[in-house]
Length: 565
Image (spheres, helix red, strand yellow):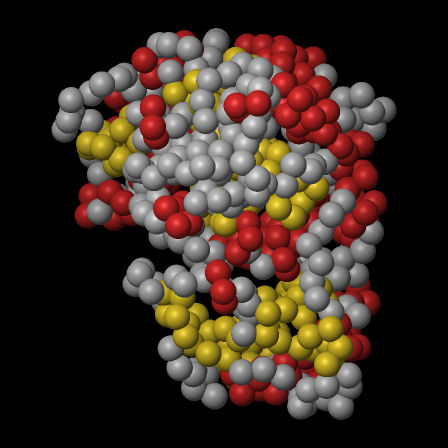
């Protein structure tokens, strides 16, 4: 396993403690023109930070994850419960040390996750500045009217504390860059050059013979960035497409509103898309709408899943950050929690992005072209889902690309920081071996990095009800919840047969991908979700490729193979 390595530079600083101070992180100022420094917060203003306590046995955790997720391993499906995971990874001594340190310094502990991985603490800005040997500033977002954040440009902690802490969040880590609004068109408002995706189209094209799950499993949608879902729109969608009337079973976060969707469809387009289609594909299965209202939604998710004793078995995430802008501390913590979920039999599916290899900052700025992977799609511990076009018009699948009228371009490529895991090295090597001279990508990518996506699904022209109107919406954020729904359906049959859930999917996907996928061999992901096209990009090819993975998921084949595991 390869984690990003945080700099641990010994420095002498003026601080509250006479101990040697350990420099932990700098913020990535050179990459973040979307935030500007706008003065200083009040010294007496209270600010919350989160101490990430070093967890134990991370290498053992990864080894166990690959064992229980590999159908060829005798331990396949032998998952741990949450307490067993805690017994393996919890650092009681570290949690107690950090808590004692904070109490001694007059810091209020707001909360701690049940097993002590993350401790949220509150103190005045001037106290944190003294404890961390730093200065805090107020940062404003340049374009969006979001709440200002208080952050430092670096921080240090005493050496004795650094022995127990991997990072302190809400210090030098800016929130992820916010992408542009979802691409949408009011159905019927313009001449339609192609068809659209409906639940019936998905069932027909991908051979979904039954949408009926059961209440033995569970499925979940992670949402953020002010996205509401509308129960009224869900009901209208179900009535319009002849689906059984169902409600979201569990709401976490309270971002549920009919009026918000009427007032501004942009407030709901992402969430409604996710909710309507995962529930259309996997019916009966209890659905959780999990919203995190935080400046750094990934950090909030990390803490939330660490605190959950019974996480949903299938999770879809339709959000992504630019990998090289994401602080190492956040990426490492996300990966650790993803592995902990995997060894509990939980699946995580992530949209691969809508802007090819360049990522969303290139939509309006060709100077931002280049290889800019999307995280968490680039994490080795999630299943990344790309997008195709063709199903909406009943034709063969090709990679969804904006220059071919697909509205968006399927994200994909290779991580610049995480090595390719063993389960995919053969597939990646085969991809490069099969390229012709004219298909070889220009330099700048890391060929040894984790390749993504892993699979794909239709991503163009989904019919979605928002504010009582029907819109056509495109993106890999449509593709991920659909595949998640398929996984939930397979889980339903496995659980009914007394088998465990599928859990971390990738080892099994790379063993069986060719057998259950519609191979996609046409397309190039060198364009953003706009008219901006770059020199950098990859071509689709036979077998796995960094546009659509193994291709579109044929549900019947996927079901028959994965139920039998």
